[in-house]
Image (cartoon, rainbow, N blue to C red; front, top):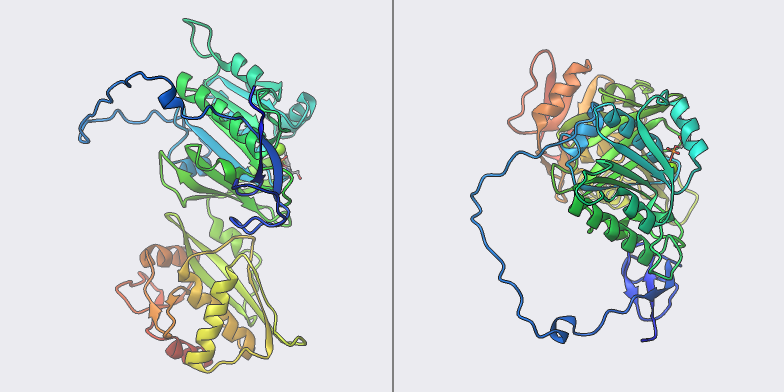
Length: 457
Ligand code: TYD
Ligand code: MG
């Protein structure tokens, strides 16, 4: 027998290295590389058997497909993120920090689907049956016809879910909580290593595709390198959703990252409460609930998440620095983008932040990545520096270019409509075709310099 080959895989990104090192060159992670035994594949497998392959058949692109039969759960936020519900035979990965609420979300989901006459199984490798039952009772779901099991062997799980010859599937949908606890007995490394989670996932994918069973896989996002994170599985599955949020806040955001059957970039907003996760149909009102008006350094941004406008508060604080290199700290925003906006404010508008520490926070635990946030960030920064509050009934959006110009952003009308619905009276926006309807007043700007001068009065 060939000697098993040793390899060194990064548990964060899955990159394979020839030797151990403290730093992964592929993803930049520290201390994430561990030793793994590689299942050795025979060399030149295709050539080993000199048999001609079958001819692959081609069809025209223009043929008609039947519409995808989706299982809508009735949980609106979930259904929107998945593009109308789960497709039978699809494999979905739900990633998120430990304790964020993945098990809670999936238990609520399978309960809802089980009530719609889907045969659902929930397999927990982490918690004992009693713990899952306790949670179900807390959620008021103990009457749901969901089948529970505690198992970690993928061989056992596949044998249980596979239909007997000539019979129909015992289960239409299965939740695997979590992939890091599952193991395939053919592989020698411990559960949670890159090799194990990949092997377990590919077994489950094979099961899903051959028998048309919907599979939902939970993957913990891990900070330290001892167990493999969900990123190493993203390329294998059909759909990747991340469940995010701040443990200090009750909001949770379900974000589509990849979807072979629907849109990505959609978000679903939930609120974690005493009875589990509740849908938040109007997130803007929630994110702005704790806002205090007439405070300097606060600006309301009309952001867009997928197809949906969300109003959030951008908060900035500027304080004289005691360091030789002033501090720039961000929560919920990209620090490179902040540096860029600070540089444009200094170079094009003459507003100096060099002797100041700058803190920027997106209130409510939301993460904003779109360039349309630039103008609101700039406004919050200027207001924090000058101590002059921005009008409390104004919303802001616009992209800033390096030459100090303000550029239009996608879907301005949607953003304005949402702001109007929530009672905002004015909008500071880029020059363009967008016009607020109703009583709202728009102030348009083409350069950051104009905007800064306007803020100063
Ligand atoms: P859980 O679903 O176990 O997280 P994960 O599977 O992502 O690790 O959720 C755990 C947290 O959620 C836990 O800290 C308690 C909290 N929680 C509530 O606040 N309300 C509830 O009704 C439930 C079930 C959990
Ligand atoms: Mg869990």
